Image 1 (cartoon, helix red, strand yellow):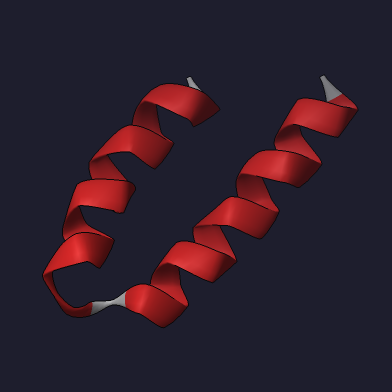
Image 2 (image 1 turned 180 degrees about the vertical axis):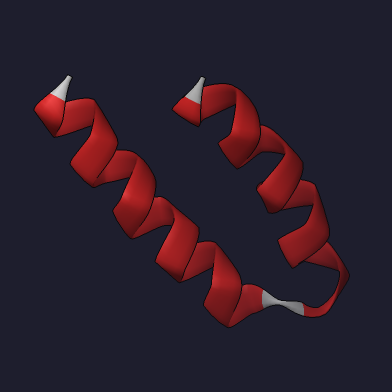
Length: 35
């Protein structure tokens, strides 16, 4: 689920939220490591 959400966030980040992408990336990495 995290990866699917990340895909949507990635598209939004491409719009005008590069910093947000980094935050999501950290969240995804943490979630992946925990799972």
